[in-house]
Length: 426
Image (cartoon, rainbow, N blue to C red; front, side, top):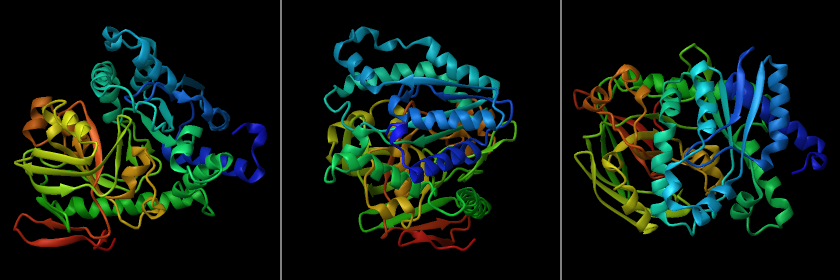
């Protein structure tokens, strides 16, 4: 939407959104630099349609005392053009200056904002092997940055903003000129912009997530048992695991919320103690393709069988990406009554979709989900139960029919969720 086309009401909401991003998501500090954009596994920079939002954010950031705001722009069509016409042998290359932009900000402890859209059909005709090879090399280039991000060396946040391609995919049945506004309305709602005082609403929401984490961290369940009509899964938890949700702290003590929206609390499973069968309850959008009705069977932590009604080839290639891709790196709990779940939509964007249901992730575990994990060597982290992989892919498994039980060290069992809702009070 062009700035001149903005209604007064929409512009007010956009300004509130920018304030939430800066004050709640980033908690931007005076004299910090702010980098908007930069490379990741799925995008190369801020998409051009987000320019009106970027300009509002930049203005407000300076008003809050930022000493420099800069933007790394991107165009996802260029990635498609590279796959289609670029030399395949060059896929291991990536512009160093783009990596350095994020690395410099991360090393200095400044702030990094990522504004993402989703172009669901962009890579649907690109060979999966080609995409996987590109991402493998890109992950290696990004590792110094990702290590600092994972250690919370800086305050960062990922937020959504609509693009025409994304809105067209989600709302094909309404007039084209209404689709982006419809998606904006949903983003404003799930990011609590429609509430009377969005900042207070976010502070209360984050505090509630913290309270649930405190409850589970005190319990230190040795095992979670997840059951529903099509799931019977035991997930062992490492000793001294840590549940996270809502805001976190940087190494310098700055509170920030890495993902907006967010409805989850999460920790790491023990990589060798997952057993049983689980079936996904919502489609997953990955590598330009939809994966749906996927069944995983685990034994001693490892996926021994995987099958999807839709996207089976993708699943089989993904779990063989590396050894860690057959093991879990995350288990997250989300109430079925979450605002995102209640919209009943698939958003083709994991930032939003993962907050619609409880989920598991195959691949890399977050080191800060284990006491002392940030300072462990790779070998120590793995020995303690953490999983290592170049991937981290979420699969939604929760529903209004799922129960979650926590099993204590003395083997007593306590309810954590019933019918998809929290079974304990905070």
